Image 1: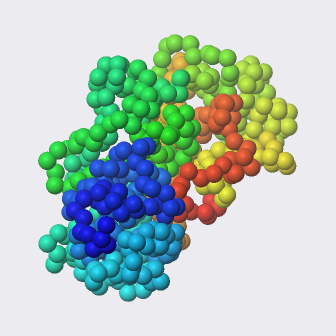
Image 2: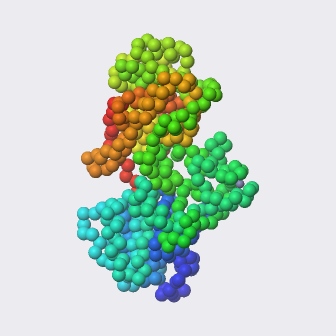
Image 3: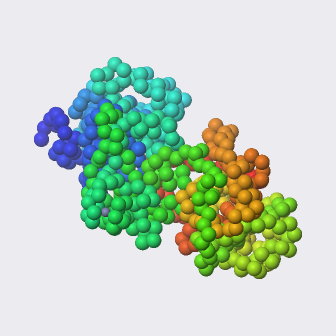
Length: 519
Ligand SMILES: [Zn+2]
């Protein structure tokens, strides 16, 4: 084969030129058949919204190298920061160029920002950069991790391809929040989803959470007939546009499509940080600002049925007036208030909880007494886990034994989401106490706050400060999490758990310590 052969098919090129990955392996699409269509798609406007670690960066770098060498394109390839650019070039791009020297001879690996081949250029650039902005023009701009890139810079890049006939614009990313550039492009696209055919009922649909997973058997199931779906069935799908007719070619990749990821892993991930679960597992944007528990939400959970089922969990919010909630695995059994500390002993005697959680604030006298007297009781502190920001709940160990730590706003996100999804019910008399309980939920509001680094986050606040039943309820939920199997982690084991984030993804969680603020 002569070196100067021009290819028109990227797959023929990969095969005939025996191109290898950055690890020196041949490209194998057996487990990722859905990448093939993305690889061969040369639509000028492509948007890929994807979960973590599915090989999207490698697919796009192959497309780009093909476009530079065989389509004669000049390309601008962007990342969130210059650091991301350096990391990508040294760990991926340069390795591919070196391993496949027979195809890319002459493309220099010294420069980070600029690669040339046969008079065509590939420019690589961090959008959040102190150095000069990209001033060159190109046929194609490619935005890696566009949801984690400065959105105004992304918009400005459009002018760089104005002079080109092709005017290419490819972006791919783990999604971030709703209505960013990636999300808007996805909404405007043809929205292709990976559609599988159920062998039992022949229904064609794409897998979604939570409908496609049986939580009891921990297996993938058909959304229509509930029959199990094998890994072979999940692999054997096809891209089907959900919004046909759009000129923008859109793809959505989730872990549910990955035949090497078990239903059990998805279920485990769903119990963690909801932002992480949506962005990096489901490949969906997450905007918790929409989350709210209304009176209707709570009334919909109400049932006259008896929800008693073995384990009993107690949550106590401390203040001048103390509030408590008693629940089983199925739902709430009792809610009430008391003023005298000694009344809590009576409540514990009556209900004999399997476990319980009491607020450590505002004064620790009662909580210390309770934790020392009853070994199944823990006290709650709110904080962020500096070692593992994904971790929402963890037990204190050693001299911190008897303490349950949780990431306040994120555990509230998860708790309220579970409530909205009716993961449990409420069976209490429809009396004054229940009306007060509803009222406390109605005061909850999400507020956007900006920290000193300029990063936005949401916190939960109460419009009146009267949200005690919410926290008593949350503490009973923490107690339940603590008694469940596999959901309750010690500090060491969870911090040691390897991250599922691969090197093709850039995730900068905030490592700042957050004080447990008073509720
Ligand atoms: Zn079926």
